[in-house]
Length: 342
Ligand code: UDP
Image (tube, rainbow, N blue to C red; front, side, top):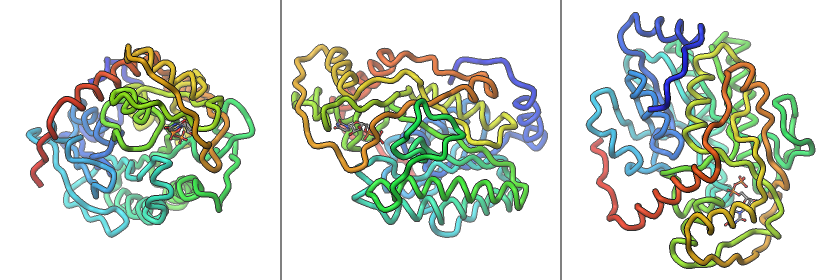
């Protein structure tokens, strides 16, 4: 559970409303994924009944195995791109289903477009039917390869629609547009969180992203593959900070998109070097070609999150990377976790 914060007026009234009908109930699509599974945990800790939905394309039952015996936790295996029917009431819908690693952009481009379009449409329709508040997990990728730094929510982005990253960027942009249409046209209560690079326990070691790659490589004594010359930047936030931002946003009255990320910017090479240092191992860097349309710089402006949510990241990168490293190290030493009953 996250450290307690004083409840804002909107937060208090939102919980009281749902509480009048018993424990609030939330649906998390992509609930067996990296972010989704942490979100399920947070909601359970806050007293919610949670329906976790996943098609396990990139999610894993291992991520939710520890929630299996929670009486308020329910797992449904389902692909959100097809009609979603959930019996009973729902107070909140968190639409977090989507593959998100650049490796997936070429491996499964069409499912990514479908989950952003059809999946968002189905999740919005369900929220409307139930009178639930809806949150879209959007992404810093809506800014593409940004031309302004840091990125504010007002920036419209610089996206190549026909490039290999376009499948994810455009899916998220479309999903934002659809969410706002449901808000304006159907008066649905909606929230849009633009998530910047996030890391932590439960990322897939073979996910292909920078942090799981570097940690897996150093743990197995392989050189760390830095793409390009490693001078491109990312700002990385620890999962606990993100979950807190999501929680505060859902309880707020903010309908405009909000950046949730850590504004401390590092070069990719610096992140590789930090991971080597944390590991205490010898780590060699090898330089490989930069993937197509790889953004040169990415860094959130979090003024809106600070003002509206009173949120800012609390976990310093070195501390979060150490926790993540320790989790990966522990995982590589243990047999596969048991699966959840369906
Ligand atoms: N990257 C890298 N080596 C890797 C994986 C990624 O140098 O093994 C770089 C990648 O080119 C990008 C940055 O790390 O510049 C972050 O990549 P990631 O896949 O984590 O996510 P992105 O921010 O590009 O969506």
